[in-house]
Image (cartoon, rainbow, N blue to C red; front, side, top):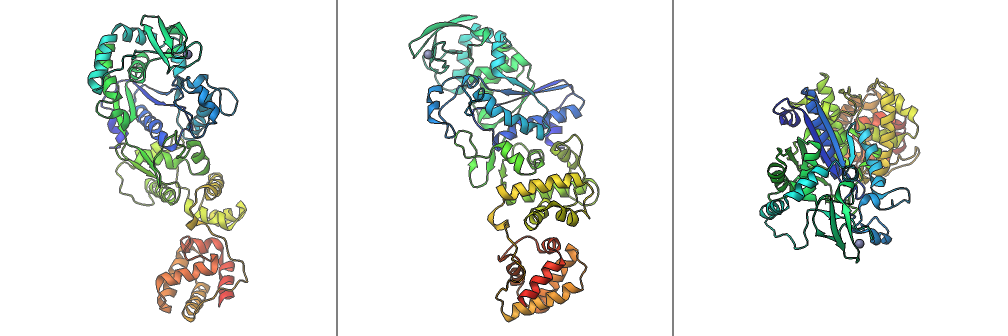
Length: 498
Ligand SMILES: [Zn+2]
């Protein structure tokens, strides 16, 4: 069974929650959380459950430091809540600046989620009852934290981080007198004051905030990364607080592994070494992201490669679709679920009829779409989808294609130096092609036969063809490549070099 279909054991209603901080560009690594949540949501609906899917935007979190993508002047905002800091582009606030492209990305990825901002949970009073219960059980709460994390709490520790009315920071205040709903604090800036915790004015520390949200929103299921799931980590403390303080069941956990970026490893918003999710979606086929999360067990880490690796995924998706519609085979027992949860619509799309890989070659040969449509149109019914994918292929070539996939055609009339054996092979290829129907498979077979007949070493035979066409030793798969170039151009180049 697909991992998401196997997750729910009964038919009770679900509130599935995820949370991502808008402290910087939301990157590919963050997408596992929201997409795992979305796949669980879709699986629960398919099961006939009455479900709610929430994305909690942690905009009340403080800015931790001046990240590499921020101007130095942001030092003055460190410690302030993200929703009260000016946006880097001068328009509105910081958290919304990073949230906006993320929401657009979710829309493209067919993620229909209810967005709730943490700041509004506090200011509207939704968290008030949870805060009251925590304050009332302050000693027991700190005992649980000490016990599970195995660390002593600092003398300054309090179950609430008030926001200083004077300097705006929540990281420099300490509670003087804990009382509900109004507490007294002092700040390192010298200010002392009072704050009503039911009207905003600060937040719970993370380890308390998480179970408080479960309680306040009735969360039943939550996927999270393994950092939170470690023994003694925030899920463990959250689960104890849920059971012993709030008297609720903690949500069913689904712990997922990381997405590692090829050549980089773990992605962090804070270092800037990552790929922003919106940037990827705009420059590559979006369904590849959903497919990766749907196909792989959450417990397996994903190696993400926007270059050659991405082409392999697009080939795999097309093969899965062909298999689903009965024209190919894959060894995948969850074919329907994998495809359904990968889909950018709510149904399984038919195979397009041409690979993204081949389009990547064609867009480098032709700058106009009409030539590509002429070549690809024979095998593709859905022209509108094809045109969209051609545009994506152009962007992908410009943004992510590795050097080895890029080429420029050698102009007709250019001579290439070849030895006798290579010329002999080209001569046989020329004669063979003249009698071959101009289809990828026919061309492919003809090349192999000409190599055999001429006695040239196979690798050298291929490289001769690439050398005369694109002045490289390697290139796109030859059958499709020559087919895309057209008979006239290929024969012309062979004649130039004989
Ligand atoms: Zn202050």
